[in-house]
Image 1 (cartoon, rainbow, N blue to C red):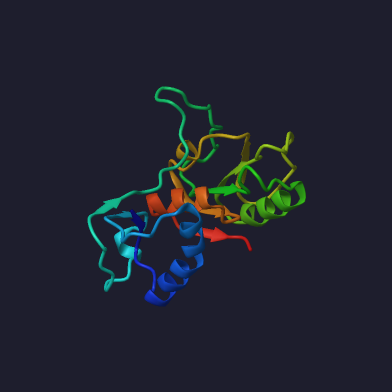
Image 2 (cartoon, rainbow, N blue to C red):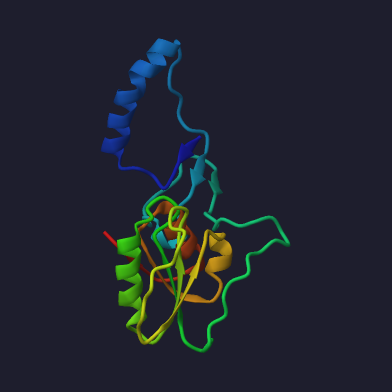
Length: 173
């Protein structure tokens, strides 16, 4: 089974040479892929790519809880304003960065739903033209409901989840 879309032939050859010693140590030989797991949405694929065999499309989904379980999210005073999700993810939780990013986004007249991550027990104090609500860890699937923009550090889970819903993103370097 291969993973697609296809990799440029010169890269495929180099990867093949790099893994050859592992096959030799195991006493086996590489075989051509019989099919392809394809995590890439069609709109992002190279139009000239052709799979080496049958393709099984797989698509990312945002983290969710079991059916029927949700976390109570705060209500905004003006639900008509666009909502921005600000998340530094579950790993990168820095209070100073969260405060600065939240203040910058809150300068716009938007509702800001900001996650505290796993390491920040208290929300920072932030003021701006927009309303800010902080939430502890919550499933991304639920947080993305009604979001017009995601501001994040670019973790794969957040990026793929936002892409799966077509939500634009601003990613921090």
